[in-house]
Image (cartoon, rainbow, N blue to C red; front, side, top):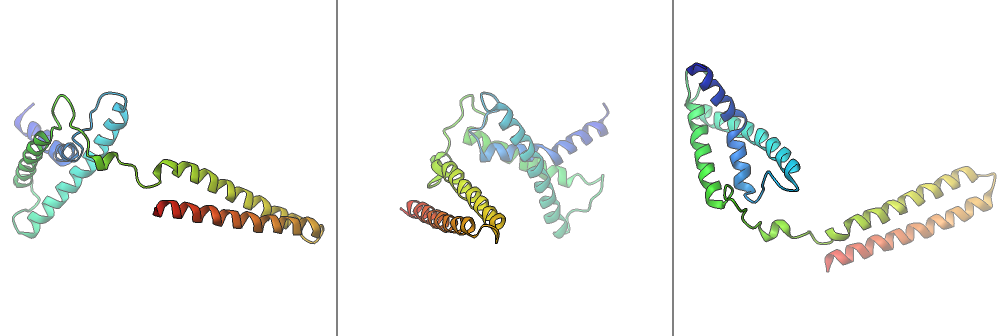
Length: 180
């Protein structure tokens, strides 16, 4: 591997991975790429590293270009140098936050706290979907009964009105529980 190939590989890592990976480690120092959530965290970290590295590269190039200090050329390693310095700074901050320690730091209490009402959000959604399903069924019954069976259509309309009232009460109770 000659010098240009090594420099090219290093440049690709600086453009597409290293700064983003280190920024992810700074933002979430408690994440580990092993254990029960290893696959999920690895995929998330790699995806975020790619996106954040590209964003940092573009942002750095934009700032340098607007300052008149950078023109995209292979002979000007200024962008790579600044990304390397940024990566070193992010590494230092990550080290200080415990991202590279053997035991992970405790996550922020805010990161672990559920949002108000989050614990029963799944139950609420399931119940609300049940209301919607019953409402669609009753509307279908009304359409099918139409003029052929007015008594059935009227019974379905009353059931639909009752169902809509129960759904509104359910939604109001949910809103009230979230406010308190």
